Image (tube, rainbow, N blue to C red; front, side, top):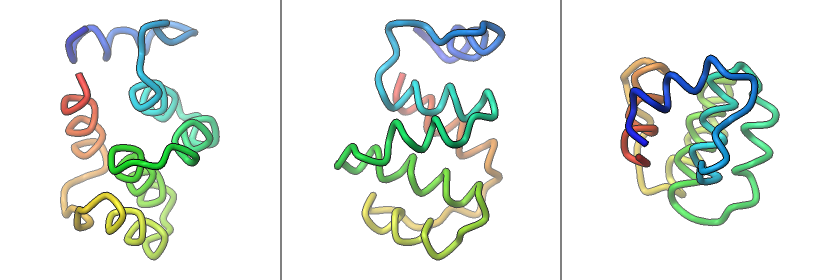
Amino acid sequence: MDYKEFHQSLSSDAPPSTLSPYLLSLWYDAKEDWNRSHTIVQDINDSTAAWIHAYLHRKEGDTGNADYWYHRAGKKRPSISLQQEWEELVKSLL
């Protein structure tokens, strides 16, 4: 699957069955289901999940929590838009 196919899948009611938990989380985020997106990544203990977790808390507006998760991911909070970060995350996972 490439970025275009992933983005096109957002017009469906259900995500593709082949998505990793990370991409599934970002799929639900794009569908405006923050809670489901967060639930998927909150118990995965690796740097990729931490980055997604950070992005979600940044989107939520909880900067302190976001910064904690960016640190766990080995990253700094970016100065790009949330949409740009979402795209960067998706493209890095595809």
